[in-house]
Amino acid sequence: MFTFCRGAFATFATEATGFSKTFPGIRPHLLTLASNFHIPIYRDILLYLGICSVSKKSCSEILSQGPGSAITIVIGGAAESLSARPGTADLTLKKRLGFIKIAIQKGASLVPVFSFGENDIYDQLANDKGTTVYKLQKKFQNIFGFTLPLFHGRGLFTYNVGLLPFRHPIISVIGHPIEVKQHDNPTREYVEEIQTKYIDELMRIWDTYKDQFAKQRRRELMLID
Image 1 (cartoon, rainbow, N blue to C red):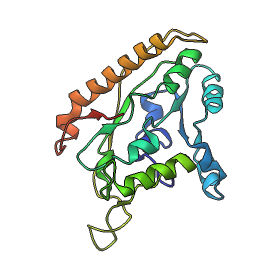
Image 2: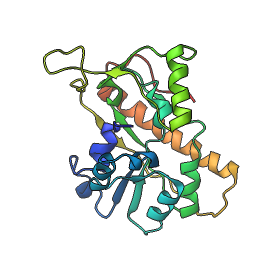
Image 3: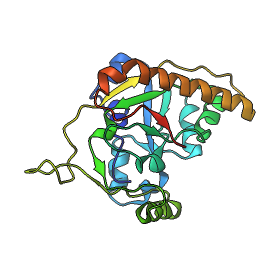
Image 4: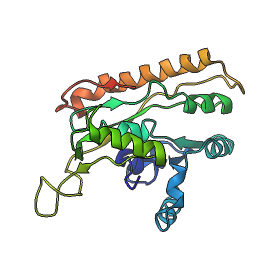
């Protein structure tokens, strides 16, 4: 995709939030789809920013660099982007186990992060499940690995139509680390056990800060898939 998760980008790919001072010794690597590195010029921008591929090989190699080397993955990815709308927090997480398995294999702690306001900087056209628009977006995703949300923000001279993001703060809250026991071939039961802890910590972040950073929410955080 030609767009980033703004909260993750600002926090982990730049020093806008002073990450290195808050977490000295941690070297985060923001990851994106491998297909993005096949696009001329865009590939060079990603490399310049230190962004890496989210492939399994890339994740393993970064985590193998030793203590302090961390990866940042936007778990919901393309599927989650289709349900992103102002005032909502619908997460695609239930079936995402790959990142947990890699963490266990490398003995790396998992740290849930939630960016409040991420869905409030753009709106998108109606694409409920079952509609023609949704079906076309999912078909596009199945073919190319990413999808194209029909989003809009504000313009230079109008606040209702344009590609600039709406003026809304994004606050990224970093949760407590979830330690894992290293295992080359973890059982599904153990992977799901860690996933439960991960989701519980994510919900703790939401419940703790929603009244402060999501005052205009339309509904509570939901795990939709």
